[in-house]
Image 1 (spheres, one colour):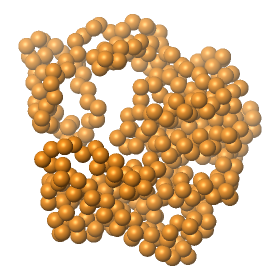
Image 2 (cartoon, rainbow, N blue to C red):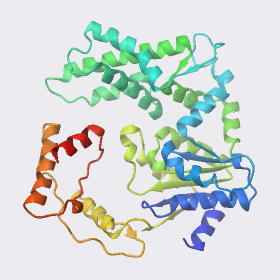
Image 3 (tube, rainbow, N blue to C red):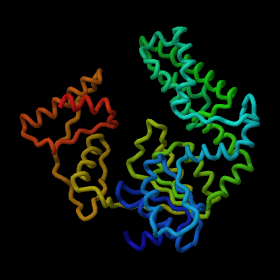
Image 4 (cartoon, rainbow, N blue to C red):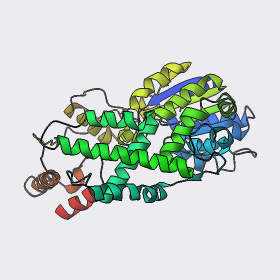
Length: 391
């Protein structure tokens, strides 16, 4: 890591940092934090480290526990969800009177995933008894989890319940099952409203209501917004491409009030799209910073992985230069990539095809199993089990 890059990180107040996986972005962020703590004598609680999920914060947690960190208040490391939860608790006296609660004097009860499913179940059971979901084949537990997921993603995207389901209805394709699917969505919409009414009546704060209270009240109330934005003077926002639009909007609002900010994006990431991530919002965050810095070299990827990355991009019609591995710019041998010529109607057909292709490579072409990579966008436990059984 060059002194020039480190000096840029230290000197620039609002910096957007991007690069491929393993290029040293998080290492630079930790160097920035150490510089603030040691050289600038910044209090630890004046620094906020924001990550998309707690697992991504592990490098910061480990590094900032070391003995070389100056004594004093610790650096605050959290996620958008954690920040929203703590803010709703802290500013509850300001929120209770404007949140539409039946009894604003009542203390809130925060629900986790399990308790949210417990309270949601009664409304799903009533809908099943009425036959609202007879037109589709969906298990009871799947309905409960899916309705909660719809509520959570709607809140993170800034949609009301009705706006979210209007969009879901537009996504229903034409065909024999269209009417049944529309009826199921409208039943889910009614369940969502009934669940939200229960939360307001009993002062139960599930994740979706927690996010709405934070976005629509904490960030719009002049006193709570000002207090929140003054609580930290320096921001490290890592993996911005993996976070939601709510987290990115928070960073955009917070930037003008900060003394310094380091926003970090991983090229070609955004893997949490199915969980609400908004990779497209990265460009707006970059434009809001004073300067942008890009790291070109990956310091951990082997030449074989670099070559595989390039071949995957070309096979998807996205040919571009692959990140260069430190110490070796050569790609691996151009081994063939096998992609099915047509889609599969059923999931097991896809698994059987993949297993058959691997068997052919090993048994007929003499390929070593260690030379074969099986790629999937998401590897669930069920997919892993099916592949292991087939192989």
